[in-house]
Length: 330
Image 1: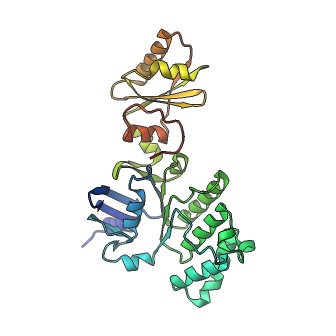
Image 2 (image 1 turned 120 degrees about the vertical axis):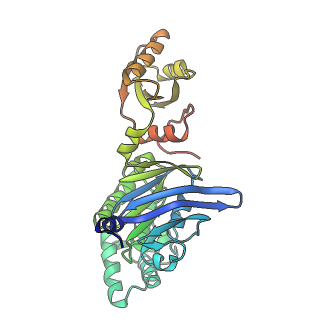
Image 3 (image 1 turned 60 degrees about the vertical axis):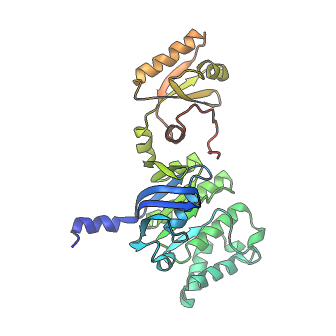
């Protein structure tokens, strides 16, 4: 018999996975992934294309049966109870998957019928979401003629029509502008406040930072798991930021140093990664200053707090990297 403490722990956990593995022939898309995700949280999967993010989401919602391992979602076995599970989750795909030749209201009407929302509640729920997602004046517009941001709001409204306990979002903001991304995330935080557990896959660093917790996936393997702050504190990297008049000269003067694992240029600044296990903050700062001085370069050098991109580079690409943008390329 379970104890009250164990019962409370089970009540707090929305998703528990152990050894989750998916193979397609000789390709292992997801390899031995463990997860524990609390109810009402926003949990992110960060990684490049092909890292296993979408495959993991599809296993968790019962669309794919894992080759090995198991997952319990809302207390249900994702493999054996997938039909019951599908009624309690919402899923928003990366590509717009609604009917472009139907109007906004017709799409929502169709989805409400798929989820067997009662006729008595159907119209009120659709009207509620049309208002909440600023689609009232678009209700009779065909979905295929809408902008990217409008389609995104429609897709999200349809995904939560049946008030799911878990919402899975697969690269949900890849086709919208920054303002629409910000508005979209404000809506996600409101849903989480209401108790919805949200899983979101992304390859954008700034988006992953918004998650309460996240897993970083690299070629199907979970290489890090925690809150953005915990991940930054836990990596074996010191981050040294250099401000110089000629940052490219600085980069070229340091790029062959074995003690430096990564140099990234961000405008007029450079972010340098060095192993925390080999240097203290003071030693790393002094090392960089000394090397620059030996090349006749004057610059401001400071040890700074790691951001999520620093974490990603450390846990997935310990070798030197010259990546300089905020999104991960495959």
